[in-house]
Length: 373
Image (tube, rainbow, N blue to C red; front, side, top):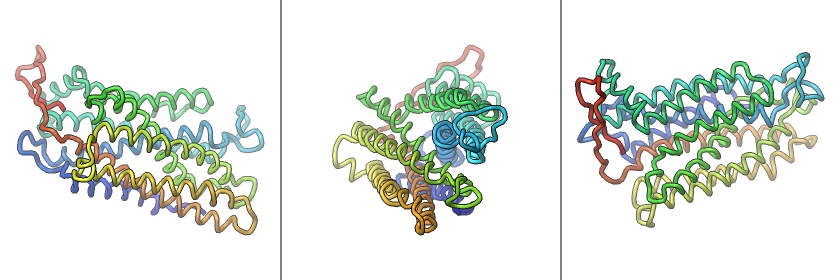
């Protein structure tokens, strides 16, 4: 019993549907009158960012599950480890999920890096020497480029570690490094340029941590749903209830962190009620906030009703059915909300962009101009 593969993929479909609808609603993917990089960049960049965000969250969620939620080995000594112990299937699966997500994180970070340069430069992606020189300059001399280069390097290191790390200490260090991958995004986030610079960065950083733990945890939980019960529900091999209890505590903390930091971050960006209700950006914030409250309500249902029923005889099977149905709803809502969040970051620019000219590298034969926001 669990969530079948087609329904797991439905969460990914919800991500792209939410992203597409929000981009069309806000007009963030519309062609520009000046320095338009082309449809590939306008649509490819938000899609790459959406994949990047979900992949990073899944890496963090997988590491959290492996480090502090799932048993590491089969048997009573599940939180210790010797060379003769057999790894618990759920523990091994969580790390396999994190490793696969890490590969997607690395590749999507590379795509975001290249497409971000094309976006701010206002030119299509190319393979000529001039484009390559300007891209290298963007990665080494421009803050946004350096940030995405750092994310790419961190993603590659974390992914490499995930294929071999098994000790608690190694998992903890890998988790810390994965969380460090959120720092560049907070520093270059769309609200970090506001008047309250430090407040914007801090609130966005906390928001990203909470979202990654919460979304990543739900994704990993959905992917582990078929293995948590063991061979028979209700037996000693069934670790559904303790897993849900531990994750529920984490999800409750993440919900408070996400909602509170989101309100603070939005208040820094939106300064009056007219912008909140009368602009596409403000309306996307309202939609995202409503979805967050719905997810918080589902989490409360888990904690107050579903999880206590899992250990009771006679109602365990029906409770498990309701449990995975609610997790599926969470997965779909989170997917759509994650898409809206990416579109929100793309539609945040309400004032005319400022034009800056990149300095020419001594070895470059032609100057390259780039729009930096």
